[in-house]
Length: 397
Image (tube, rainbow, N blue to C red; front, side, top):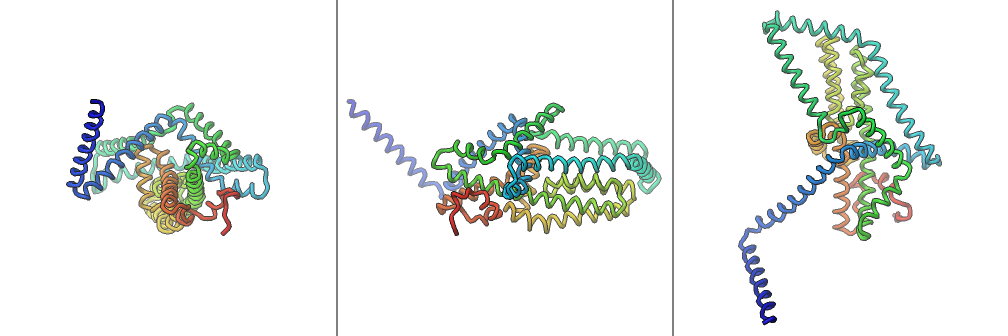
């Protein structure tokens, strides 16, 4: 009796497996492939959703962490250059951090200095221009009434407020209070100092969290991804500098007021690819319109568009494309998606995060397919990736 039950269970299992096999054979091959991809996609989407939810819950930690990593990537080339020249690590850290604060503080001081000098004149000319434009709308061919103008202005102001609120209320905004911002800044500075002081030790600790068989792949993929983030930061710094000089110098030569603050804003905004420089450059166009008139504003538009064409057709494809191996269309999409999900922080971190994920995926897929690391030329700067590999693991050519 006891032997009959196992035999019956075995026969039932075989019969069930046979029926399932017959059902699968009746399905078209294309449908089987689509369903196989579909359930895997559902699993990936669910995992991504859980990850985004966790990031949102830990936003006060995640945003300072990302800020510190991005600043570390910006400082990394100069920092490692000093280490290679024999500068003590503590001195290289001091020079890097203090130098960064000095540069940023100097730019902000220049911007505030010019704003305090020219603000009263700009405000007076702006009010005059708005009054002249209002009179034109009333006495001109449109023949609008004062009530209609006020209603249009109210609608425009409401729309702008909604857009600004939507941008600032992203899921990853550091916080709504001064205390949150101050805490995030202190935490970001602490993480920056830790990564500069012992970044290699932190990375070794992270690698040891993975199973032993996977550590080699994780280490190689992480180094390739970090090299790409460093290259992205270095290239974006160059692009932002060119955008700021181009638009700021154009505003100065055209006599537009507040040229230095415009250049500083363009420099900061250009770290959001494509979108940042356009939004900040529009401020120069607005100032030119209300202060200098429509013809100067038209020339300012030409300057902003010319700089953007230089960035979009020369700098981004030649510098950024080779640096991060991400197509410009993908850059625009990830920036838009990051802004929709997380506001300003999402737009700022979208491209380096996408570049890191792209390089890590290419590295792992190439290694799994060939059993050896992919060609560094498919990832980022070969010299930069090679410099991140420990000397004990380098093989002679």
